[in-house]
Image 1 (tube, rainbow, N blue to C red):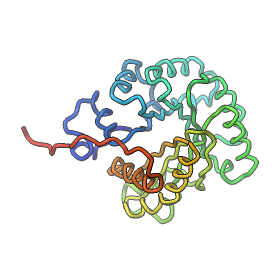
Image 2 (cartoon, rainbow, N blue to C red):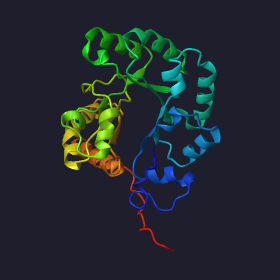
Image 3 (cartoon, helix red, strand yellow):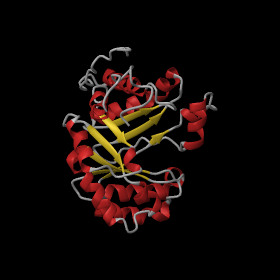
Image 4 (cartoon, rainbow, N blue to C red):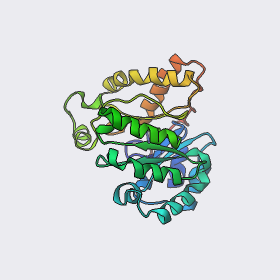
Length: 274
């Protein structure tokens, strides 16, 4: 997402035309999760505007349609996938195809996943997020999935919610996330040269920052190994997400001084009546 109800006037100018919002967001961060594509394939000309609003090194991690991953579970989706891939073509290799799977997708389904991944264009980066507990707690299931992903040059995307679930929710936003987010062990192993991490903190900035400290070390090590990671920082309400993402980046730069700084966002003028 590159816009949020709490961001205009703080991180984004207000008012701002829809076709300029991604450009403003890209002044804060150099990657974005594409969640709207889960619900509908965008028009190709819409995706073209995304490409035009961002620099060539800006990264899009774009979620595959729900129909493909959740409803049909890769069966009979050739037409839908052709339309999806055609729509994303303006982004070229900047787009990562993100396959987010439901908790019901378990070890017995890995073969279907493998067949699907092998049919994807070889020049498209791909990543998979799983939520079935066996993939995290059963050694054979972990190895089966890792082998399938490695064979297709696909990254395993961890969604780290361990800090969030350390204590009960204390706000409406935390309560909502408590009922919806997966509760799984933290995973820090990368399979490709482009690892992707999704991290969920708390309403408390202090707890969120304390909770991501293990990731700053992991990410710094990946950079030293020559990998190029992408990290997304979430909180239950995401009100401060752009600023938190930049703070995480600064924490990593403290460990890897050669890491490029994020772009400097344009100043946001306070809203006025006229």
